[in-house]
Length: 248
Length: 190
Image (cartoon, rainbow over all chains, first blue to last red; front, top):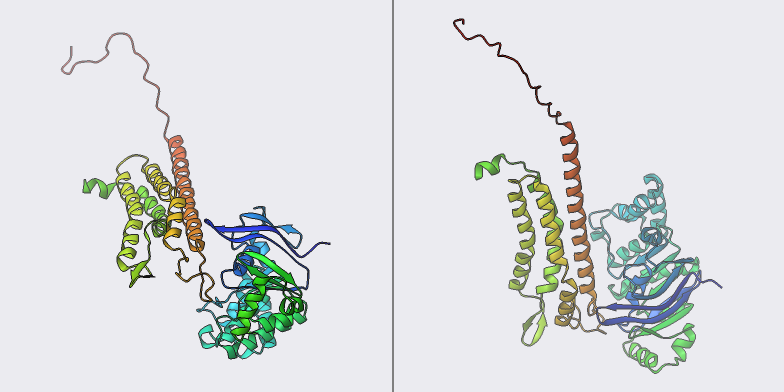
């Protein structure tokens, strides 16, 4: 069986610092994978490797049947398939919300401006932000900015979405609106890999949870198993700390 | 000298200044790797001091200034553009060759990464060596672009010179040797 994403023996180093060690992971179409683990465990680096924002030192990544780590791939064409949203919203501050959302479809996909704007307005309406289309990002709350960042990624009609701790920079009361949007994406069958510290959300939406520790996927399985009966001591320790911090 | 410079062709200087621009950014990243170190306040590591920042900027300016100076001098010699391009290539090689060593030393000076936040802390942005790798890649890429632009400038300069040579009128053949007595009649008659 072929998987939509196939990662085998992935190793990534920053100098002598090994941040990912021999990582194996498969993601099927319409599957939602969540990556959990302490800060510095390699979650963000793994997502960045899948999008080729980081060079891979060893191992192989196949996305949609195409090996992307052999140096022969067209990076721009790969990134058209993969949407990525970061913790920092990274919206262009000098552009309106509408321009932020239409920029990539017009420049990268060659969509006519009118068509891109109509599509963007439809997406913004779907998340209840149509009245903010002509505002600049600094007039929006953190939650609204992050929702615009997600919509901007969706405007490229990606086959895979990578979400890198997208609620970490938000006030607790703003987290729900962003998670609701992600929840709606899972309902329409979007393939996603989500690095998160939101354990209850992770338990709710994930098909598979991967616990990363010191650059390795130490344990992976369905959320019920990981959260209720983790096999590894390190997973139990991590979940215990999360529970103590009131994040589960 | 100043008069000569005033009337000299400007192309070598223009090319040198053009090449000095990406070189400046390559040098800035390279010198950050080479020189930057965290400050220490009450035994705790903090961001680099102002004097360290100033040192980085001053050192980063040196290669570009040298290339610009060579460019100015090159206006006085024939095929000066080649000299400017050569200087930029040499400077780019000098700046980028030790990047690996500087990357390792910078990483050692920032054991928790550039943000000085320990691994495992939720506000940790840079892992150890992460910024250094990006900085090295950026400096190397800018260095390569400088070299590529310099080669292109040299090729264009040579290409522009070739048709110029062809256009020069051919040298006329020497006059035939005339034999016999002189026909010149001296003024005032024989």
